[in-house]
Image (cartoon, rainbow over all chains, first blue to last red; front, side, top):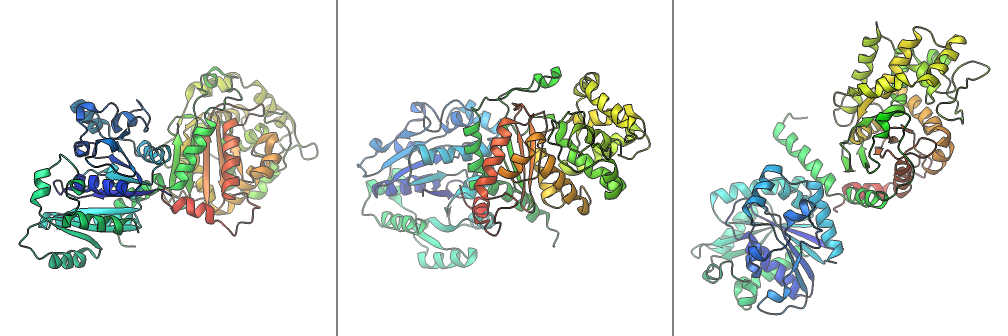
Length: 251
Length: 341
């Protein structure tokens, strides 16, 4: 049976989309058929990581939600766009970056039933092994729905007070939604921090497994959103840590 | 229980989302897409208002006794409740007069005849049961109240408790039903001839035409059915809609007479107390588990919704809901309610 993994953070700028793209790539490198869907409809962006220009998107998730196309049509095979070939296959279901279409979603909202049906159809029609959901930061209906359908949830946070508080909210909601598997990833940790101490403190605070503590990485910042880190730096400690995250989530 | 609105709101939203993400929702969507192309049957056309129904309309709603709601398709589209109102009005009459008195006026014997047959029990002169028109008119005549408006308001208040919202009357359907209701009028006169219909005959007929002209949607039907499944308490609002002692009477007549002259085969195949209406609605009750509402205006020659009959049959068989099924094992239903996707 296909697995659904949601990648979430309560606040923006945590590196959520970047980690979602890297996890997707690692799964495809392991031979899986994976789709990553951008349900961050209000502030989409993950398509850039797969070198897909916003302008080049024919159909987006928005079009599916409005009944203009099937979910299959909204999915683009981005496998060939990777720097290094992978054994599996990656489909991207992007959100529209057209201001008018974002505005329409903001005005009309999105039908949770239609979105859920889309996730189900994506899994069956694309014959997926795993569906990765890149969620909108904070809590809105799409995000909570993504958590509700997921078998595993990865919550990204930075080691600062605002993220601590917000992450507490997400952990509480995920608990209420009975997510079978939940883990935290602490990202952009200043190099002056002791990662073991951070891990210990976060584990204690949220009573939740910490899948990885990733240091602030100049390489990742420089790469920004122009490519997939685990492909550019296959031997980097961050890549090893992300592989460990995938193993944690796929249990 | 601790009063914590923050927690209640979160739980309510979580409940909604868990239902949307459940395998039961996926099952209903699959069922809906499978039967949507079915174009058998015809919309009721004995009055122009019903003939205007769109044959494409199709909604399914399941509500559990825990208050979880699963719905697909045109579940907000309003239509007239028609005969699906009959068991509920029967329940009100039982509350007003008690079982013995109501039983002396309206029988509980399946007639095996069509819904509009002009036939009374020859020994007792009673209409056979409260689900055929004759019995429903006699039942409407039993509703207490100081005047016609008062009686109607008591029924509206009752339907508000069952649905959890204010229910309105479709005036043009009511006027059409009343204008073209000569057959029902003939039934009423026959009953009055035998002394079985006391009070003002036209007022009883009007109340009957009004109860049939109430506007509901498929979601309402699901909640109403779930209220009966939940022994008379609306599982969404927590409000009691009917005295617990009369729920079994209502379900009994639904089980034996609810689907007109298809009731026997329905009881055999589907095995759930149910009631259909020519507006296209069907309510079906799985006691202590859930209620089913289906809406699709294409009717078979007996006046039952074609898609509605198919959908109820499939749901009952798939989850083993037949009341005489070996009910010890409801693992399939539990898994569909609580699993993911």
